[in-house]
Image (tube, rainbow, N blue to C red; front, side, top):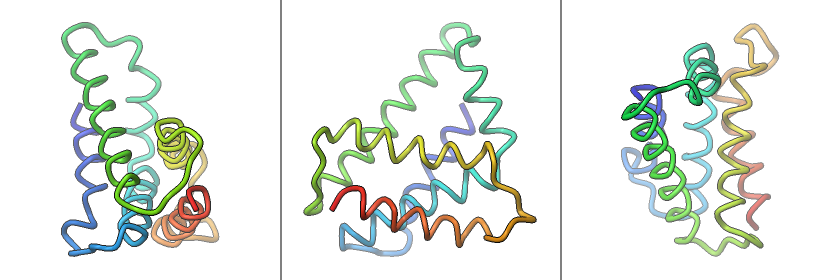
Length: 129
């Protein structure tokens, strides 16, 4: 649960940065999402792999946090002049892209987590415009 709460808080970075323009907010949200998953990879992998094994009420709490996270992404995307055949699926695709970073990112690689986050932010823009 705390991992999802921290990930959600990271995605609100645009609020802390005072960003108003929807495109900037989308890039900042995607960047924060990717950086979080790159820098907390082990924790993220455990949460995502063990979710089905959680018992109630913990499982319901975590699933609600996930639904809330997707809803916040959808609300942010709804603010801008973005286009997607299916908004919910488009948001899930972006979220999954960021989560996937936890599977392969290495701090010893060619890109820092921040550089990768910026790159993924641009992917998100292209995905929705």
